[in-house]
Length: 209
Image (cartoon, rainbow, N blue to C red; front, side, top):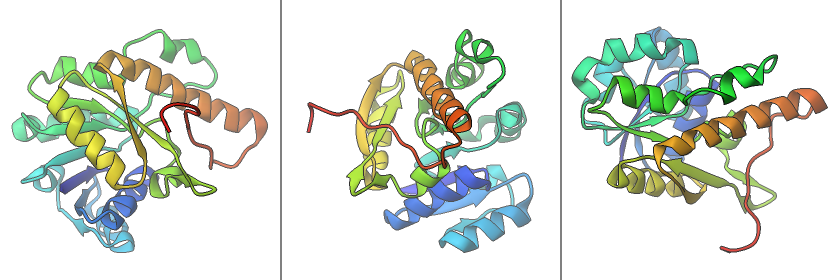
């Protein structure tokens, strides 16, 4: 697949690494083109001069930017992502007041509400960047949960999730993005509370094998 990754931080770079390893053609972009170029060089991806340039011809677009940059990113993209599969890998994390996050709609739902022509999918947000780059622990594939109201977009994302090393799991409609964002919040708060390294990942045990 042709994959556009918007965001050249830890998350964007980790997903670019696993995507290129999975045989995908990856183009990265960032608010600062120099950051995108540096990140792309480190993982064998291409760099674009702008987000709009990055998504041209992309089969899948991954949004990997801070929560407070979502509005700016989508304003810049305009109609260039209409009818495209857009994977929201973002989180709104508030470790001091988790209820602020848990009691509201997910980032993915907000994106879909504001941009109804975009085929929004939620995935990857529940994983630390280290696990996005390498979705295995002790030789066991971690689970890659995918939520969307668009079944074709979900199926394409499940295929992509598997191709980069996760075990794909259909998590249901887009409203389940609230659960996936809650999983991310739990992952982060456990890491902070216990001073664990950011290496944990999610795995359902039992059926299916």
